[in-house]
Length: 150
Image (cartoon, rainbow, N blue to C red; front, top):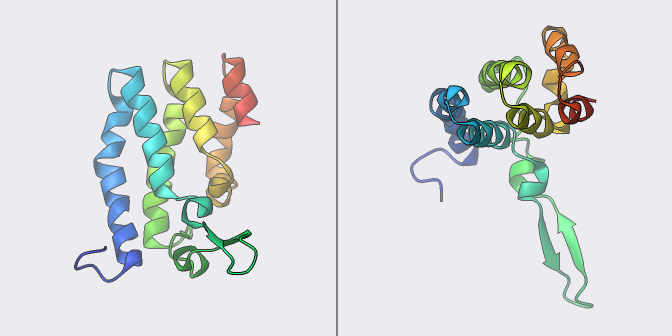
């Protein structure tokens, strides 16, 4: 599944430079749709949702199902800490995403970025240097962006 890498942790860390160097370039594309898709892709790959790695299984006796956590999530492989190397890459791409959320000419793109920055990003968004962007989002001309920023 992971080729010659040293497990899923190494695989996920190799995606971060890809997001920064390749996908991030499309955040300044002339097309609104391309910028919107690039922003969603960045948000999804930077910090994968734990729900993406949870599974449903059936119990042997009654056919009822239960949710269990994937070992990838429970061992913290997809968690990024702000001071780590992967955290610094996340921080760099997040800065770019916040610039797009505040200054993109398309309200649809701004709304998409703000909606994509969900609770997974709370650890990063609560830092002082991001507050200015958050307050600017609350003053956006589009009501949908302001509501999503709340």
